[in-house]
Length: 216
Image 1: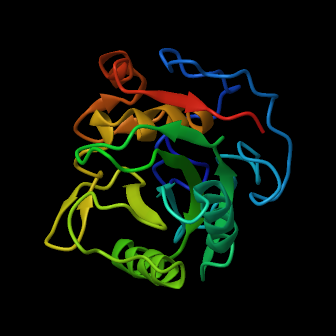
Image 2: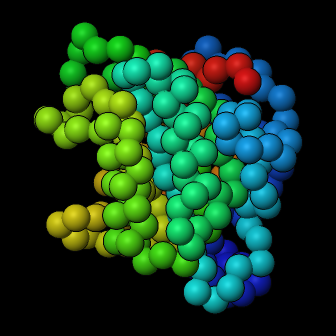
Image 3: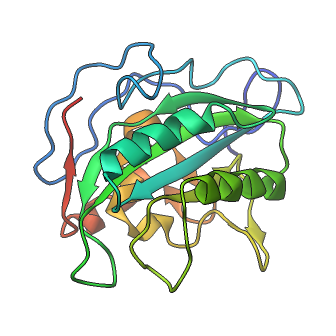
């Protein structure tokens, strides 16, 4: 049974002193996170990972990625935009990671990060708000795995499993992507993926995927 907050709400992880995710190729050392705004310092702590939540609050993890139009600036601005989501509060944002594109070759490297947030929005409501942010950044969906100015993926919502046309939880490919697992483990080292087990257990199998943590 997944751990719970004091309010009885299931949580994807237990709070623990963060450690660098093992197996990240060419990772640069990063200073321990201090309270900051996501636009100031990647990898910053926005608040405690497991706060005292109300019974209607839920913990969610969102992946951020971009490889067009100054992707570092895009992801930094997107992290700031997440702080303005309705009925939500950003808790932590991981460091930024430079990663090789998946699937389609010949496109620029991506900049990726993962954010943890608490929200009273329902899963589909949160997804719709993420789509709004993507559109604000000029996101187009011309074809799968196309280059993009911003990509926001809802990875986890508590320990909910959902298989719908618009939304599948947990994200069906998150455990196969180093650019998701590495930043996720940075901010939630004990994270559990419903139906997949420990997120950390998947990292060794992803060691051939090129990924580099950027210095703050």
